[in-house]
Length: 338
Image 1 (cartoon, one colour):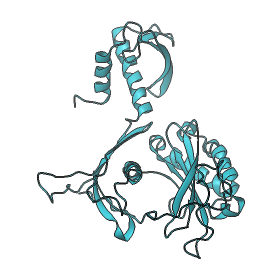
Image 2 (cartoon, rainbow, N blue to C red; image 1 turned 135 degrees about the vertical axis):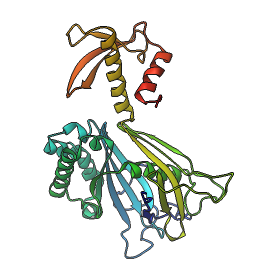
Image 3 (cartoon, rainbow, N blue to C red; image 1 turned 30 degrees about the vertical axis):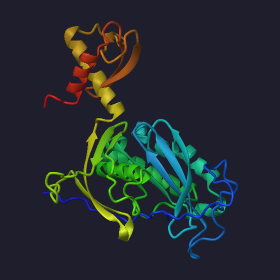
Image 4 (spheres, rainbow, N blue to C red; image 1 turned 90 degrees about the horizontal axis):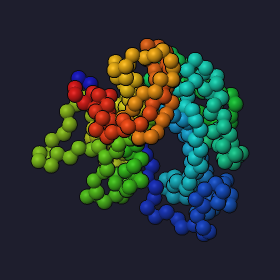
């Protein structure tokens, strides 16, 4: 039997009595009067802590890469979030299969944003982490590993930001991907903080990505109080909030291949296959195929993959567009009959 994953997330909870700023609070880098300081205080709560800290997170998804440049201050007993700078670019790292050096260089424009945002004196103590998701998982172990190694070498040699101490450049496990989304949403909705109302129930999270989708929620056994989930791969025990926090017993599941873009490719492949059965192909690459999932009167050229090769196919809505027919295609793609 698979043992449940039990990470210990010693997450700092912002102080509920946060100092009031003496001037208007900045909501972005552009509105910040001095990115190396803070408007909330002039000295850190703990003399051994810096007044201001930054952290960099690169989300390497299947459709694109995004950087989050977070600014925190240490005016209270725990770091307090002030604002973030967010930039994204396309395509994602998985588009560079077999070209790891190009994949690494594709993140340069994002890291250059961090160079412009983080004050020079703070760059050497601003950690950076790269978390890839399902797009790289679908590439396979060897090409994905080559890309991750190239990214880590590029950041370490070309930029002054130190790599995060633990797992700085990795493919995030599908289990963690969904659970971290659950933590983020419920932390922002004030349902799992140490000072959140005890009667507040956490929200369920449906995380629709490009290559995978995650479902995470905390089951409540109303009819049989005290009953818990059986041990297994779907069970995830999470302690959140440090010593005063709570252990949450979550149900989580990541459906690889059922993200928006990957599912769309599956729909195109199935529609093309069904058309080939009804009408043998004339051999041209631009045969028009009716796709019930396209609106009537629309036309789209799509890339259909199969048998180790790909081809361009023109799909049209025409008189075909039909919710019922499209729904049946989706049921086949999602194996609803099984």
